[in-house]
Structure formats: structure tokens, C-alpha cells
Length: 71
Image (cartoon, rainbow, N blue to C red; front, side, top):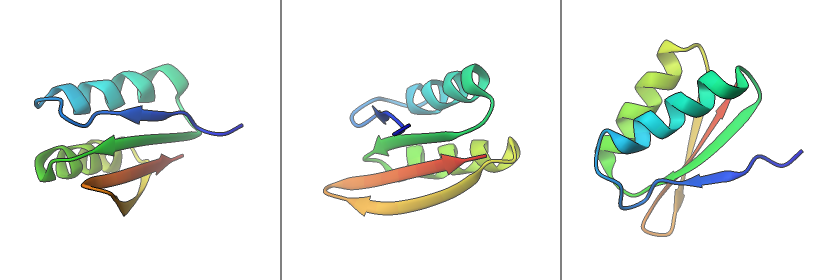
């Protein structure tokens, strides 16, 4: 199943992190993809994912980044 891409571009912190946290809590494992366009959101989501033992990969995507979390 393709992971739905969550679009957190333009959201003020901590909204992108809360969006990802809710998704992690909801699915428990699998793949989460999220688009962000601020360095703070990229770093905070990466930190959250690491703390939750998810692996993180980040690719530049247009004016921001596509973060893929897997567990």
C-alpha cells in the first residue's frame, strides 16, 4: 500500500510535529511520508521519529523536503 503523503508545508510549529506524532500513534508501524518547507519542522520531525525508533530519510522536494519515516 502506498503511504499517503501528509502535507505540512506552511504550518507553524509545532503543528507538523503534532501531525506526525498523531500518525505514529495511530499506525504504530509502516511508512509515513510528510512534506515540510521549514528547517525547524524537518529537524523536529526527524528528532521525534528517532526518539520513537523510526528510521528517517529526507529528500529535497521543490521548495522543501519529503521526509519518509519507516518502522
